Amino acid sequence: MYKPRYFKTQELVPEFVYEQLGEQSLLLFDKHLLITIDSIRSHFNKPVIVNNWLRHGKYHERGFRLQHTSTGSQNSMHKQGRAIDFKVKGVSSEDVRKLILTHREVFPYITRMEKNVSWVHIDNSNTGRKGIKLF
Image (cartoon, rainbow, N blue to C red; front, side, top):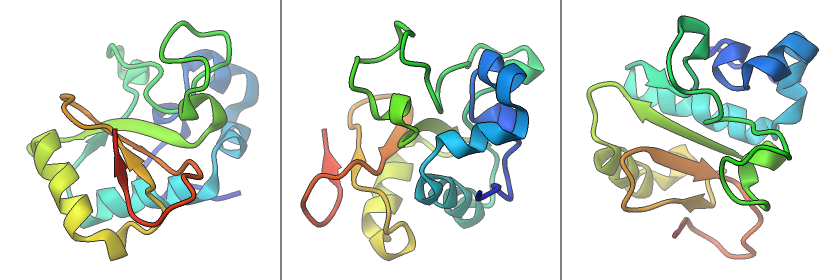
């Protein structure tokens, strides 16, 4: 099990999941996605906000999502532990996307990113092609 260096498990899963599984919640994720979010935090050297429910914030499902949640689509990569939405403090989401695209070698496991949104969505779904697909 990969344990992220820069994130508490509670920052990556909904409260209910953490209450049920605790640290074992990390097993719900593809380890390459966890490595990637650590790489993003390390590269920017700034706070990266995924979920903040632990600090009474509004974000609960920006990492792993349960199958029955109404957040996102039925086939969401979040529900497979293969997607994370986040913001880097002090850096626009567009600038984060540009940096990821221009430094592809630093983030080899990202296969898709959502464009034209105020957050950054990364996932590592199997697209069957090289590079990062913007959708």
